Structure formats: C-alpha cells, structure tokens
Image 1 (cartoon, rainbow over the protein chains, first blue to last red):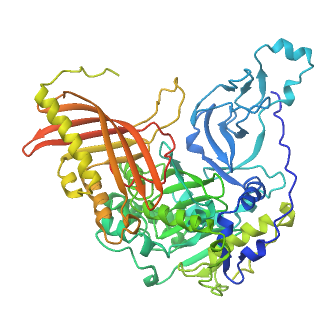
Image 2 (image 1 turned 180 degrees about the horizontal axis):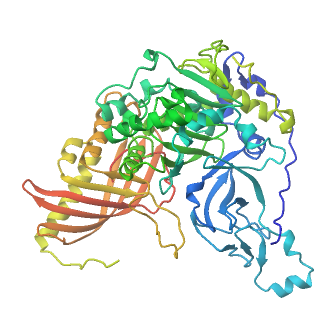
Length: 446
Length: 175
C-alpha cells in the first residue's frame, strides 16, 4: 500500500492585538466584534479549527469497509472513511493535482474516489492508484506514492470519531480530559453503546458559530424565557423553573462545558412521548450499574454539553450537532439523532421524531434560538455597537472546591462560568502560536 | 417501484381538488391556523424528508422513511406546531412572518380507494421577516385527498424540496 502524503503544517500568523480588550473573562465582559470580524474569523480557522480535535462522525455511520461520510473541519472538506482493517481515516476531500473535490456525495460506500477533472484515482485509504493517460506521467518521473489524499489525525471516543489537523495537538484523551466522565452519560449508559439514527439534517444560520456553541456549553438560563412558547405547545405549560432545582452544576475543562441537573427526564419530557420517559426510567438502574447512581440520574435530565469548539448535544432530546463555521456571521448546522443501540425500535423512532419536533429547523424550540442567535450576531454590524461591553458575569466566584466531581465545578446551572471558560479558551488559542503555548487555566477560572 | 396508474377524474372533481389546495395556501398566508387544521384528516401523515446528496447508484436514494425528516407528523404533532405559533410568548413570531404560498402544476388523479384523490403540485413559499429577511423554498408535493363527511380532507402529504442543506434557519410555516 502506498503511503498517503502527510499534511503540511500551517505557519502560525501573529495574534491580533486587541483580543484582551474584546474579551476579558476576569471582568466577565466581551464585545460583539468577536462575532462579526473577518480577521478574527480567519484566525479562528487557523488557530482553532485547524488545531483542535473536531467531531467528524459516529462509528455507526460507517459499518462496512468503504463506507464514508463527507463533512468539514472548519471550512476544510474531509471524507471520513472506514478502512478494510476497521480503522478510520479522515482524508482531505481535495485532489492533490488541481484541488478539485474527489467525492461529491454526502455519504455512501465506495471502492475508491476518482477526481472528475483529470481522472486521478484514489483508494479508500487515500493512496493514488492511477491516472487517466498514466503514460505521460511516467515521462515526467511522477512519484505516485507522494500524491495521495492528505490525512488528518484520527482518534475515537466510545463511538465518536474525532480528527485534528494539529500535528502538535495533545491526544484526544488529554484534550477531553475529565469531561469524558460526563460524555459517558450519553455514550456509555448501556452496554450496547450508541448509534446514530439515519440521515443528517442541515440548515443555515446567519450567526456566528460561537453564539451557538456557547448556548450549549452552559446557557440553560435562556430556556425558561426563549422557549416558553414551545414548552407550552409541547407540554401545555411553562418549562421547569431551573432556579427551583435543589441541586445543579456547571462543569468545564479546556473550554468544554456541561451544565446539568439530575432529574433524569427533564429534557426528554418536552418531547411529550411517554414511551421515552418510560425507557429512561427503565434504563436508569442499568446505567447506575455502569456509571454509578449519580450519573444515572443525568440520562435525560435538563442539561447540555459543548465539546470545544463546535460539537454539542442535548441529553434527553438526543440531538447531536456541529456548528460548522462558514464565515464570521454564517454557520451550517449539521444535526443527527443519537440513541442506545439496544433501545426498542419504537423508542428510537420516537426519538427520531421527537428531536425533529423540538430541535431541528422545523422544531418548535429551535425556531426561537435561531432568531436570537442571528440578531446577537447582526447587531455587531454597527461600528459602535460592536465595541460595547456584553455582560458575561453571572456566577462569578461560585466555584466548588470541595467536590468529588471531575473538572472545574461550579454551583448551579444558571451560571455563566462555562461561557467564561469557553471564551477564555477561545482567546488563549488565538493568542498562542502553538499547542505548547496554550495556557492551562484549569483550577484558576472563576 | 411501480408507479400507480394515473386514472383520470371528472372536471368537477379536479376543480374541487385544485380549489382545496388554493384555499389552503390562502389560509396559511393569513395565519388562519384553526381553519387550516380543519382541512386535515384525523389520520393525516404529513412528511417532508431530509434530502440526502447521494450518488445515483446508491440504492438508498435521496430520502428514506426511517431517516431524519423535517416533518414526519400526525395530527397531534401539527396541532402542537400550531399551538406554538399561537402563544403570545412566541417572541420570534412577533412582528409576524409574512408568507406567500404559490401553488402550481396541479394534476389530479383518482386515488387507490374510493373517494380518494392523488394530487401532484409544486409550490413556492416566500417568507419575509423583520425589515429585510427573505427566504424562498420551492418543491414538489404528492398529496392524497379524501372525501370525508365534512368534505375534502388532506390524508397524506409528501413534500420534496431540492435542497440537501436548508438555505435558511427554519421552516416556520407549513408547505
């Protein structure tokens, strides 16, 4: 087998000068310019999306060798391909001759990929196998082994496939750190593991990617207000009042964040499907055997999670999503539905339809989010507005030190600690020339 | 897949089916939600699949009944969607979204059962919000209309748009 060509690493460009003025998480303030500015966005593509571990697929989307899905890492188009030896490769979907896409479908099974332009033909491992008019290449002493599709680093965590272009990035395990313990609520509450329901719903928002990612990193505060109409439509009453919960937490690490309580079915309840509530009640004792009693009560609870930078999910609604950046004020939202593999088919169908009813472009909850996020972005078009302080100060100094919970733990879900940690990480990455320079803020955030 | 035979209907029947679709478009444009709901059969299945960008030789095709959808609704679901539109706290609907539903290419054939009609149509939906937001969706629909005690009702609708990525943030209307 020919060895595919390795990636050229990017030269780090100097950081922007005014980031400390635009984002000061010790003071709990930032400015809308970070949602609007084209230069900042270019820095993000380089220093965040070309550097961090990004979610690219769930293993269940690739059951057989040759199965592939197309997605993007930042704005870089990639193919996620199951290999004959069951490993997974992530290949840049661009021909090394003139750069044309080599695969135009979003998913399928292939024996290889052939560029439409000059007929360069690649194996599913990315190696260049042949070309149209191959004889003339020989005359130029062409070395096929140096012209494969470029590969990203790949690693997996319990069904989720991540990739990075960062040659010096820490391992995925190190990148996720103690947040993996919380990811297990979703990924490891059942011995059969998880799978994606078929299909992917994509939509377009005129908003900055950080607004959406931050909403899932720890903003349950908006739900009671923004989603009042949806809750009344689905439940016939208002959403649960989060400030009434006896206990809840915001936890973060390296910019990832989970906010949660332990009411088992709080998120799931808005789907209005008794079969799902029943399933969660039956599943909780099984989950307790695997994860302990504490986490078993988080299964479908009022909660949300973002893995920095742009991979988010809602337990209970079981929507999994990537906020794909498409410019400073535009995203494509890719959504999937995740279920336990061993769940009854009826329950899987209820989740497929329930996620659609609530968190999808036609979902009664998501409609109100979209409107908010677009205008949070758009007001920054104003030159003066762009530099005004935005308040991110809720829950300052609410850190819980005396806890067995992993990560940076904060009291209460109605808390902007996770948002601050998210933007701090964002700024740290933009100010660092390499992974080695990225400061470790864990234990010091407020 | 065997295409169902395109059995013709009388001019009066065709006209009634066309009138049904045009009135429905007007009800939606005027936010007459309850009247719109009353045009639906209790047994309605309202389906708009997600469109998948797959190769021709891929047997899965562009959509699958068991895959994610934009609508896969019965009457209870559609009533819930209407209930949200009607909430005073539906902040994103105030000021209202302004809609135009254009309906064309209407073809009416006899259905599989007595009293049913198989109706094909195309639509263009233009929505505007705020001062300058505008979204345009076009697609093709395959409906089954059924003559029930209170007149013609929509029993099944399948909605196919050409977009594999929705070019907008939501679909805050019915198509």
